Image (cartoon, rainbow, N blue to C red):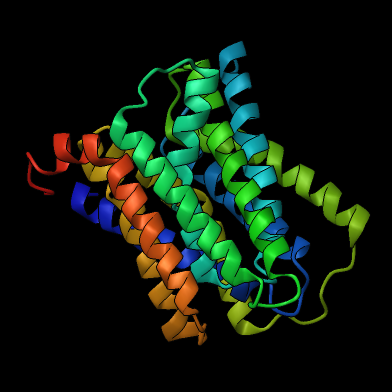
Length: 296
């Protein structure tokens, strides 16, 4: 695959994933869809490992990497699927747009990275201010909207901590092996959780929900992750950082067009503040990579 095609695929997958999560869970609770998604993702990963003859390392650092990635995926998915019942797909994407900010904070605390420049501090403050505005608007979005936002925000923190943990381990492992190893932990764990708290197979699944589960299993859980690691090795950091600025906006627009989601003025104001914060926070890598070299 060409680098531009992989880059555009990431934007498309990340923009549509929150909407697909909502569609997949319509009428069937939230545990079965996430369990089915991860089971499909694991099956695809095992198939690709065989096709491309990728050997999975099992040394201590590899096992720790699978554990760090797996725990992050498990906690993040459970929180997102629960929260998706109460907030819009666009709002989920917007909250996940804060991942670079939370990751920087986690890296400063855990990895002792002293890279908080003035632009990052200002960007963090702007992002948190936008987050406060979004939560303020959430008071009028529904009875459980604030709870949904809090749980999804916790998912963002879990994902950020997982990313930093994987970086702290520092193992050199193929992206497909990391994905496969993580899903080997996540899929059985989700089956046990589903069996304990639900355990009832849905008698009928709406066609849209079925397609959404399949889409998330193939693209959201396998291809998107591997495309991301593919472009990381071949593009400037600033160009990759641009993805986090594009996907929240595109997801908000897709939610409006395809799911009839109504975004309040306060949410749009908070979104503008969050995006400005992200732009300021990522300005150093954006100016160092995006502004100096063409995208393709």
